[in-house]
Each structure stands twice: as C-alpha cells, then as structure tokens.
Image (cartoon, rainbow, N blue to C red; front, side):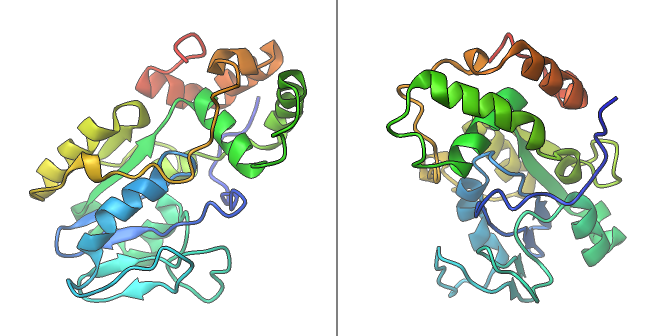
Length: 238
C-alpha cells in the first residue's frame, strides 16, 4: 500500500509563497501547491501587515509584526522562521496550539488529477513548446509516480485528519473566498481582484482525464483516496 503520511513538501521548482497569519482578523492561510495559492495570497496578505506596508511580489524576507505574519518569499528562505509552503503541522508547532485552535484556518483544495498536470507543466514550463502531444503525455506519465505531492501535510494539522476550518474548492474560488471573508468579518473583498498567477497554458493539450495512463490513474486514486472521498473528486469528473 502506498504511504500517504505527512512528509516535507517539495519546493515545486520555485512555486514559492508564504504562509499568512492575521492576528487582527484571526486567520491562518495554509498554502498548498498548485491551487491558485499565490493568487489568494496576494488577495489576503494585506490583512497580515500594517496598513502602510508596500508589497513587492519578488523574493523577500518574512514579515512579522503585531498585525500578523507573511512568510518569506522566494526559493532561498534559509534562516526564515515562516516560509513558503509551510505544512499545517509546522505552522501549529511554530505558533502554538492556542493560535491554531482559535484562529480560522483555511486552504484551497483541487482535483488531484488536475493538480498533477498543473504541477508538471509548471515544473517543465517552456520545455515542451515545440514537442508533440504524444511526447508531452509520455513524459508526464513517466514523471507522475515520482512526483506525488504530499497534500495531507497541508490539510491535516494533526497529521492524519482534515482539521482546517474551511477548504475553498479551486473549481469555485470566488464562492469560497466570499465565504471566508464573511466568516472573518472582512468587507469589500472582491473576488474579481483575484489574479491567476503562474497559470499554465493548456489550450493545445488534451482534456484532463486523457493525460493519465490507466496505471497512473489508479495510482492517483489510491494515493489521494482520502481527498477524492472528502471533496467528491474523481477521474471521471475531471
């Protein structure tokens, strides 16, 4: 049986962005890879810093104030306490059980079949521009078994059970963002402000379900069985 235990997450080849914590609004945003996470980070980071702070989208050091925390940006985060793609357990252990228990914790989930393709295309951006579709799909199916994202690390603060307060579905981002804002008492947050950063271009590529060999489809179904069942995802609904 495949292991789905929590492990250190990959850097996703530069898909780096910070954990967000707001003491003013009492929320924690756990950033999972390839879930429009950078886009949502840009939307919510303003509530984690003093009002006069100016953000730079490039790499930067962590920001820790009485208002909140914005983790370090960029690939090189050595020496930073709060950093890109911190797992739920890392956040809980660093900031304490009381903050973890009392703050509103949210993240974004995505169909793992679609997520795997997004991760592959981001990791290999620019490498297949002149390649045939058959070549891309063959490369993808060789890559999949060695690159399964350890998503439980982001969604399970206790290591095994889903215990965040809300999971925004990638497929319904606007509705999820509005719900989170209502729970936090944040007014005037417009989902239309959401920027889809780092989005891969799939315009010339097959539909999601046609990417996977039967062996890799079964592999995804087994490895992410807990996620598929919890959020109603499947290969047939991609």
